[in-house]
Length: 73
Image (cartoon, rainbow, N blue to C red; front, side, top):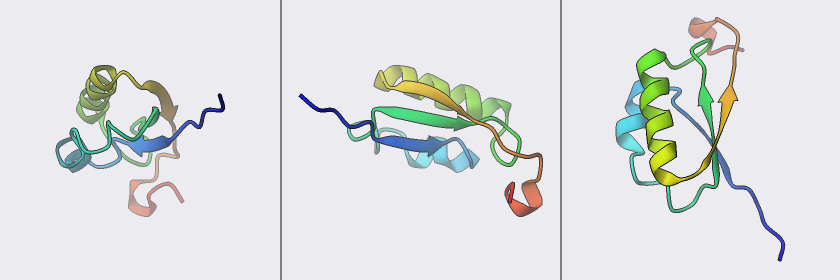
């Protein structure tokens, strides 16, 4: 059987953790978590990782340039 990995970037904005809690878990199979460069912060990363573990989805890193003003662009 063929499988598709449905991935979602998470943890880019603090409110992501609260707004998306439980809303995407039924759909995604992996998440990339913002690593604090262009978005996110230590607490948001921790909370997002905890959620991903509860959802039993694969976790990846979403690094970015330290450029919050331009969101890493």
